[in-house]
Amino acid sequence: MPIDPDIALGAEFGAVEFSWSATDVQLYNLALGAGADPVNPRELSYVIDHKPQVLPTFGCVAASFHQVEPPRVSWPGVQIDLAKVLHASEQVMVPAPLPPSGSARAISRIVEVWDKGKAAVVVLETTVNSLEGSPLWTQRRSIFARGEGGFGGDRGPSTSVRAPERAPDIEVALSTLPQQALLYRLCGDRNPLHSDPEFAAAAGFPRPILHGLCTFGMTCKTIIDTCLDSDASRVTCYGARFAGVVFPGESLLVRLWRDDERVVASVVVPDRDDAPVLSGVELLTAERAAGVTPAENTAAP
Image (cartoon, rainbow, N blue to C red):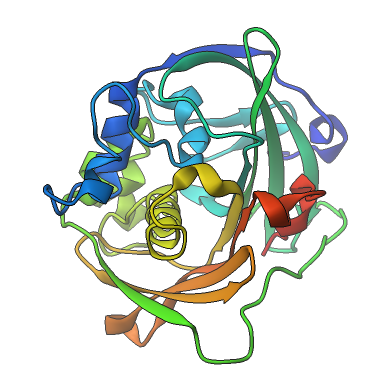
C-alpha cells in the first residue's frame, strides 16, 4: 500500500540543517515578480543587496532552495508517484521577521492522514529553529494524492477560511511571465510538471503549469504591497488552499477583503471564466495572530 496510516501518522523525519543567503532571497523575490518596476523604492526593497526584504513565504522553500533533483514523495508510510500528487494547502507562521541570511535546523512530521475515497491527503508540519534553538518559522502543508484513498481512514475536515459575502475592498491584476515556472524552479522545486511538456501531458495537463507556491508567494507579496505599505515584517501568519492551476503567461486577479489586522483573499484567472487558483487566503499581522495555531487554516480539500 503506497500509504500506510498506521506508520505515517506521527512519523518524524530526521533533523535537516540548511543555510540561505541574501542572494537566495533576492532570487526568490525576483521569481515572484519583484523588481518589475526597477526604479520603484518599494520594489527595490525586495532585491537590494545584503538586506532584501524577506517574505514569510520564503520559509516555505528555504530548506530545499538549492535542490537540483525532482522532489520525491517518500516518507515513513508514504510512497507516492510524483505525477499523482497535487499541492493542496500551505501555511507559514513567523514569530518575528525572517533574516535575509542564516542557518537553521528543520524537523518535519506527518500530523494528519485523510481518506477522501478516490484520493488521500497527507498533512506535514515542519518546525524550523536557528542552530541556537530560537524559533524561526513553522510551516504546514498538505498534499492531495490522486488514486491513493480507499484505505478506510477518516475523511477529515472540509471547512476553510471563506471570503466575506460582499464585494471585495480591492482588486489587483497580476501578470505572470511565460517563462516564470522556469525561473521559479531555480528556487528548488524541480518537479518536471512545471518544465517538461511530456511529463505535464502524462499528468493530464495540456502544458507545464506554474508552481502553486509561486502563485502563493506572488499573492502574499501583493497583499503586503497593497495593504501593508510593502512592509513584510508585519506579517505573522499566511496561508491558502490551492484551488486550481495557472499556466505561465496567464493574467490573474487578486480580490482582497480587509478586516482590521486580517486580510482575506482569493485568486482567479479572468480569461478562464474566473477559474479559481487560490482560495481561503488569509494573512494576519502581529495584533491579530496572537493565539493562532497551525491547524486553523489547513483544511484539506
